Length: 334
Image 1 (tube, rainbow, N blue to C red):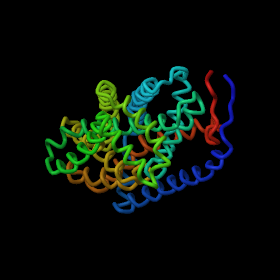
Image 2 (image 1 turned 45 degrees about the horizontal axis):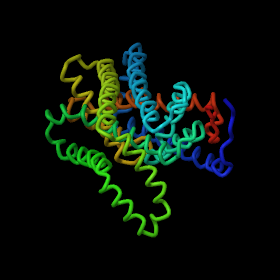
Image 3 (image 1 turned 60 degrees about the vertical axis):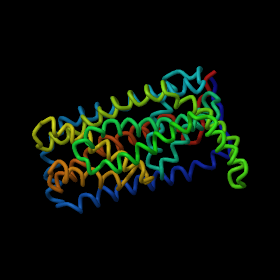
Image 4 (image 1 turned 90 degrees about the horizontal axis):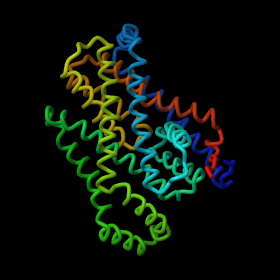
């Protein structure tokens, strides 16, 4: 293996990226403070003190279980895209280093993973971007699958559920009807603002076509449902750690609320879903699970700590060990 520097022009993007991530971290702090102030601050702090902190390692293990299966999907997608010379430890490094990019607006920073993959093994950025998009798409379908039981119990969520499902499935279906997708690309060639991007869009489409074929998407969604179920169980443990009695109803509520709120945060396009996801989790805990606002706020803070912020911390750790990645340099695997 040899070290191979990336374009100096791309290095100029480093500071804007870091500024966006710092802005996301500051927004996260604001959300935490606002959530605590919106409830009875003293009660929230009291609940934090009585929380069974010895259960937190189990919750983090549930999150790591989710990350592990999602990494397997990421590496599988890279293989489908034609990457054959990237050992899994290098792939894992790219995957974990992408976690802090989730707190950029709309998660657009995650496209940087496609740049890292190109630098590591030469996969065109457009095809690497297709991997990132396919990851998000399959995750969305997976959490919708987990949320389906909750929607059957609480039918008031059917309209939003149906709209999201139709949108995600629509993308998959259009991508697999090649004449229709190619017609859209030809149409783009006639639009002045789109014309210069058509080549990249074609490359992105070809990558997406492979990743969204029935066998691949079914495998990815199935793996995603199992992985996100892990985080749902982690949320269930948090609720019990705050004194909620164990029950099947509480487990179903935990999985549904976390799954649905994850989608709410994703479609909000806010950095890491900050604000949107927290409001959704806390509000649904009060309405559906009957928790007090203070208990709902405490549970929301703990699950976001054990999922989003735990992942960001792991990613920043990867950056600390491999700082070249922040400068858009990576090891090329020969």
